[in-house]
Amino acid sequence: MSQENVEVRNEAVQRFLATFDNDTDAFRDTLHPEIEWFPIEENLTPTYGVEGAMRLRNQWLDTWDEHRIDVEEVIEEGDSVVVLAPVTARGRASGVEVDLRLHYQFKVRDDKVVYLFEHKDRATALEAAGLSE
Image 1: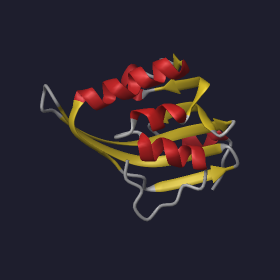
Image 2: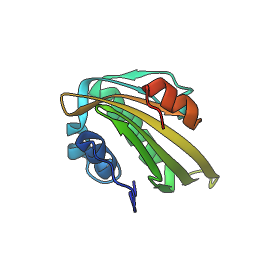
Image 3: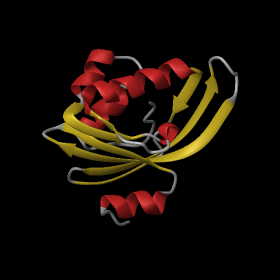
Image 4: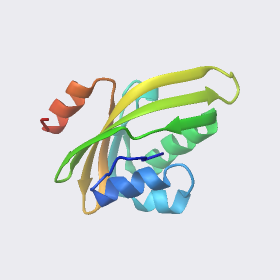
């Protein structure tokens, strides 16, 4: 994930974003044992635990021939972080191109990501995280 010109102050989220694409072990180390992840591609059906999160990550990486996730905006307070990230990708098998904007709502506990909800709407993500502008 690219973080050009945008600073993520929360170290756990920063590590999560930096290692997602290319460092399996370091990415695993960013995950809290009790992580809950609500991915858009699974219709927001929650996945629990480190192994579930790793499965989601690996499926994502295996699905796309090319992908880019850019961090455009970060709103954070304490252990709550919302990241606006446009996503572009091309399917490995289908060649289908995807272009969408996601608002990732992170919660951190014990310096690890314990919660991730992928919202389609900025206002909903901010409200869910208890953050205001």
